[in-house]
Image (cartoon, rainbow, N blue to C red):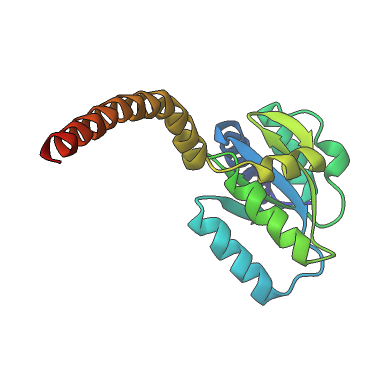
Length: 176
C-alpha cells in the first residue's frame, strides 16, 4: 500500500492535471507505442515549440483528472499506453503535429481528445488537424473584409484610367 506522502503527491498531480485540462482549449490522447526515444524527443520538441504540453501519464491518474475536470466520455480510451498533449494557446497545433506524426508511424495512434472540455473521438481530432491555424483564419477573414474595398478602388481607378485614355486620345487627335 502506498505511503501517505505518495498519495498526497498523486492527489496534487491529479489536481494540477485537472486544472490544466480545464484551462486547455484542446487536448489529444495518443497511443505512443512503437516509437523510439529519439523520435519521442523530436516529437516533444516540436510540441513544445508550438506551445503545447506533452506528457505520458498513467491511465488511472488521467481518469481521475478528467473526472475532476468534468470532461466526460474519455474512459473508454484510457487503455494501453497513453500520452496526452494539450494547449491553452490554440486549437489546431497539437492535433496537427500529432496527426502528421501518426501518418508516418503505424503504431502511433490518436485515440481521442477534448475541445473546450467536451470529448471528441479520433476522427474529430483529425478533422481539427485539417483546419488552418488561427492566424491564417484571421488573415482570411480580414482579406474577406478587404475585398469589397479593393473592388471599389479598382472600379474608381478604372474610371480614372478610362478618363486618362480618353484625354490622351483627344490630345493625340489634336496634335495630328
